[in-house]
Structure formats: structure tokens, C-alpha cells
Length: 477
Image (tube, rainbow, N blue to C red; front, side, top):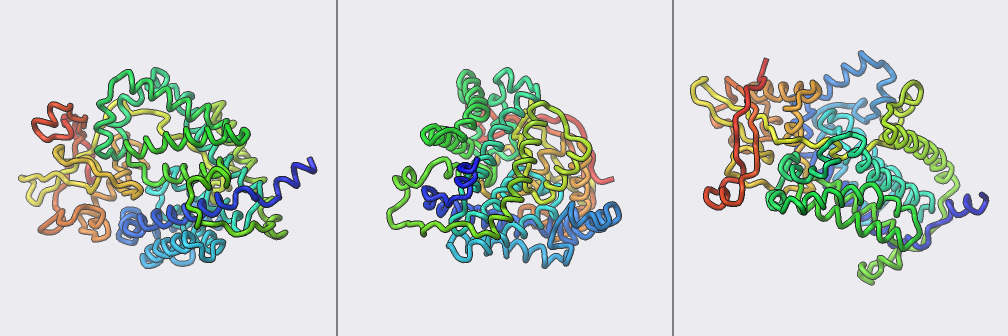
């Protein structure tokens, strides 16, 4: 045990180059994530946005009292103005860029984590995604890499990658979704995913036998391959190679913002400097590793105990399909407030078909015009767009609305109300010139089934989608 303890706190001499490249990559991911928010946060959570932060904070104050500071930690408890929201996002961009340049790395990592955590809570349902918590969990651990870090930090980052991949896979099996158990998930996934790009159309039309084989391959890479992350060097690199290959295929077929790039960056610690040196130019050199200071070591030991304990509870409860209760549930909520340890379950249930909410607007209730979004499917002749790593939060949110849960329908209705009010921050989330003569007086909505056009139809008509009307849907009440 003494040798193990000493090993965990030793400086990772063979991961100096990996650490350097990892931190630069993380800085760029932070910069992209913050920049994506900077142009959207006012329309999502500003005072004239869909879910104003000031209203959220008033509700939390009434419901939780002083406990709100621990349950929803945020700089915006100090100031929740629109300028503070936008300013925090642009400060985050600067922190990410400076981190990528290697300037004041620890200070930039702390700043990026605190700013993104604040925006994560401010964005409410629009920020309630696993890539956001993955970025926060990764960013927090990375604070302790600066100056050389310690082997225990490397192992906790590997544990995070293991948890991300294994839970994403095992959740598909314990969901009992026949799409996964019957290996039919990828036969519909490319069509029903939130925001497909042109590559999805081509993947969707691959032979059925290949899509079923690929579904089996996804389950193997997500459930079995993660155990290689914890194995000796050669097996770790095999696990990393298979995981990276899957992430590249996902990027080639899906718009999933920055999560795939972040997963690839996390795989760096499954290699070592000797392996990476073959791929990294010689002029890029890492500074000598330093021993983690006693104060940082003491602080990290406490955080590591919390993270490992919570991760073990989360993984165990997901594998046995039992929710945490009592003080264990309270413990998880406290930790989740700071995004130090999180659950991951990517597409455990696969939609059988793509149903879109199509909103129509009018000035006179006689002539109706479909409301187009920047990125989600609308006009069936409009080609899908490749937008990763950008994440359009409103367009993504609309994918969940037809499912009917109140936490998604309520913001959708608030969005329609803001349209009628002519809210400029909300209109900025839509294509330019959407309402040429001012905000619409009337709005209505329908549910429509969207399906990828077959190759012959697309070749002869130019249509990317075939559309079928389903039923009316709720609009502004």
C-alpha cells in the first residue's frame, strides 16, 4: 500500500507531452464551447430571453433559501444582468485561448471552470446535457495537472473516460430498448438524431446488414473496450485506437457539438509520450515535470475521495438499475451541483421515427408561413448543415418537444410568446429576416414526420426529406 500511495503522488514523467497536448486541446474546446454560448445566452437566459435567469433565481430563492448557493453555485448570484451573462461567455473564450497558448494555465483552468459552471446553471434546461457536465468534470480535474500533476490525476481522467464510455454502453442494454437488443438502432439513428448533417443521409442508406453489424460494434466498443483503459500499456493503446475510431465515425455522421473531440482528447492519457512522439512534431517539447505541492496535494486528495466515491455509487446504481435514495441521493445532488461527478447515458432509447414540431406564423390568420430554424430540419429541400463543434441550443431543444415532457414543452411555449413579443435576443436565434414586417400576430403548430428521401427521390427532385402531416400541436396558450 505504501508503494501504491507513493506511485499515485509521483509526477507522471512519461506523460509530460500528453499533458501538454491535452491542456492545449482542452483550451480550444473550452474556447469553442464558450463562443457557442456567447452568441446564444442572451436569447436563452437574458432578461428578454426564453427562460430569464432573474426569474429562475427568484424561484430558487423562494424554494431553497440559502441552500440555493450550494445546489446551484454560480457567479451570477452576485450579478445576473444580460451584460454579465454575455461577458462571462466571452471571458471564457479568452480563458480557453490563453490556456491553449500555455499562458497562466492553472489560473485559466480555474477561471474557465467557474465561468462555465455559472453559465451551466444559468442556461437551465438548455444546458442540461452530458457534454456540458463532461467538460466541467474534465476541466476540474485538469486544474491539478498544471505543473506536472501526479499519477493519481492521470488515473482519475482515465476513470472519467471509462465511466463515460462504459455507462453510455451499458445504459443501452439496461434500457431494454429493442432497437439496441435487436441491433436495429443504427438503422434509424442517422435519421432520428437531433441535428443530422449531410453525412447522416449517406450512412442511413448503407446496407441493412452493415448497419446491424455496426450496432453490435458500437456496443462492443462502449461496453467491453473501456476495460482496456485500465489495462497495461499495449492494451490501453488498443482501447484508445478503437474509441477514437468510433468518435471519428460519429463526427462523420452526426452533429454532436464538442463531445466527440473532448472524448478523443481524453484518450491522450491512454498513450504515453513515447507513443505520442511519433505523431507530435519534434519542435513541440514539454517542460520538466514538477512534484505537486503539498497544498495542492492535500486539496486534491479530498476532491479525489469525493469523485471516486460518487462515481462508484453512480456506476453501481446504473448497472443494477436502482436509483439512489436518502442521504446517498442528497450526496449525489451536492456533488452534481459542482459537476464533479456525473452520469452518462448516450441514446439509451432510440426513437422509432423522426417527428418535428413545425411552427407556422401569420399576420392575418389567412396566409401562413413555416417558421424556419437555422439548423434543425424544416424545408425538405434544404440540405442539413455540418455545424460541429458549434451547439445551437434552441434547435437541439426542439428535438425533445414532441416527446411531451413539461420541462421541454414549457420553454417551447415561452419561445413562442417571445416571438410574438418581438424579443430581439430570441429572434437572433433564428435566421435573419424571419419576420420582415415585425413580430407575427398568430402562431400555430403541427407535428410532422420527417424521413430521409431515398436516393432516387433525391436525385430526381433534390429533396433531402419526405414529410407527412401527423396532427396539430400546442402553440401559445
